[in-house]
Image (cartoon, rainbow, N blue to C red; front, side):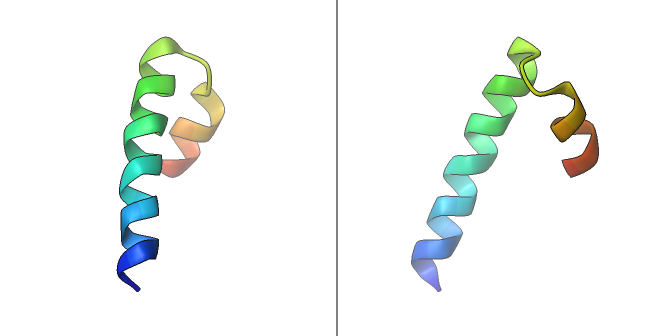
Length: 32
């Protein structure tokens, strides 16, 4: 669904920001 893709895109951006901050090192390693 288009909505799901939109949500996934926003989540990726948020994950990137959090990853740059170093808030979710473990999750980032698992995701990427």
